[in-house]
Structure formats: C-alpha cells, structure tokens
Amino acid sequence: MKAIAIAAALALALTGSASLAQQFDYGFAGLMGKANRVTLPDLTLGSGKPVQPDGPVDLKSGAYYKMNIVADGSAELALSGGDFFRAIWINEIVINKIEIRPMGVHSLEFDAGGTAEISFIAITPGSFSLSIPGSSGESQKAIFNIR
Image (tube, rainbow, N blue to C red; front, side):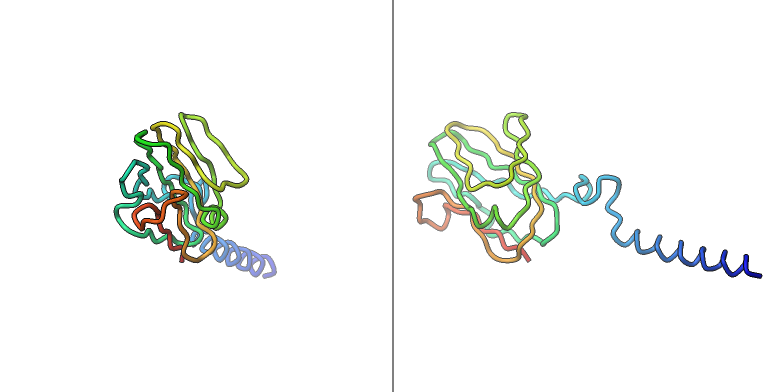
C-alpha cells in the first residue's frame, strides 16, 4: 500500500512540474532562440533621410529583438542614445561579420556606408530614443516604447 501511495505522489509531482515547464518552454536555446526573436524594421542613416520612417516601435519587456542600422555612406553620421542602451541587454552587435558582445554602448558612428546588426532583450519600461547627435528634427531620431 505504501508503494502505491509513493508512486501516486511521484506521478503527481512529475506531471505538475512538467506542465509548469511547458508554460515557459522556449526551446533548447531558451529565450535567445531564433523562434523567439522578433526582427524590427531597419533604421536608416542617410543625409536628409528619416531614421525611422514607420514611427515609434513598441517593444515588450523581456522579449528578444534584432534590428539593423543601415548607413548609406552619404554623410558621416551616428546614432546616440545612452538611455535606450541602458534600458536593454545587448546580446551582440555584428559589423562586417565581426560579433561584438559589449558591456555597454552609448552610440554607434558610421564613417562610411554599412550595416550594424544589434540583437537585444528589452528590459526597462519607458520611452527611449536613438538620435543623430546635433540634430533637432523629429525625423532624425527613432523612438522605442518598452512596455
């Protein structure tokens, strides 16, 4: 009789923990798996071009994102936004197939045309921007709302 009670308790414990594990089952790679990643629209750096043509981007705290920053080489331009970079955890920045895993970032500057790919997890809720230093136009920045 004791053996049946122990077996029943063990079966209940195993089924209870299995259903809990499935609730947050992100796959083998966890949260960082490709199946969990959302690709955001590209940001554009070009002389006289809007940085973010589609308006503000809404992000979910705890979600995994990938974004490209594309410079056309028409001018030496940067995107600065220490508050945004402190509100996210950066997995990596890839430039010319070189993967960089920084502890912190304040800005990215392009002296010539090229692409920087950033993968990150949104963390701190709020509204943040990446902007071209020294510019004041609304089209010269990208707005991110983390919820």
